[in-house]
Figure (cartoon, rainbow, N blue to C red):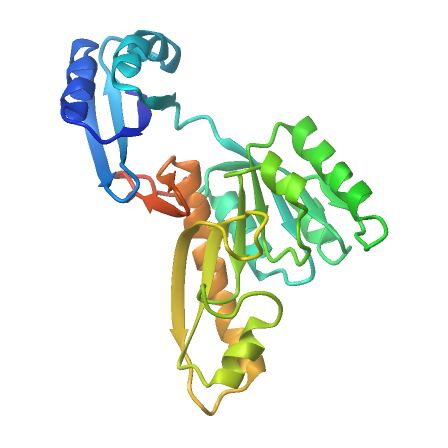
Length: 294
């Protein structure tokens, strides 16, 4: 039976879970998985449920019927059909490990997205992208043409109907206007365990500080460089005997995995913004399953 996902956010109050459960029960819905969290520091309640409907309810009928309950409580809510793949634009520069990893995961169904375009400011990965039967757009970016270049990028995003932009080691700083228009819909991978070592050459900065752990951070993009709400992080151990170039090589796998996990959480509606932070719920059963092995 097809599953539906419900996401909810509102002020913290008594009886929210009971109201939602009663509504779904009245509609003949069977809850399979549920996560909830009250962020008391921001007075925000978040909930995500996956369920099916024995009565054949759809996202549209449930949305209309739930309006009265949601209005009484003051909820922001949405019903989602997991079978509808989110449209994604990937942006990349000259480091291709994250792009290649995402293409592989997409190809085997481990990352159920609809890649509608790949944009780069270089031609390095044109053949790789075209060989996957995906549209490739090379848009050169300089200080002189940056507004025009971003306008072309946003034209592609709008015309393709993309819901998400993924910066897979795209090494250009986005304008405030682009960040605001796509707020909460641009995911970046930064090759550092934020909040340490922001900006350019974080591995070099880490080497100079003699760290014993390097990491990667995937976050939503905001106008403040490398300051956006963090979705996913991970680390790898290093020693005093390794060079900055070693850090770069060791960091590739961490970056690829962290970015893929962040996208996976976003497309399955598991990430909620709470002020400058995120609430990230665990995956529902079966969400990591791939359509095929290779």
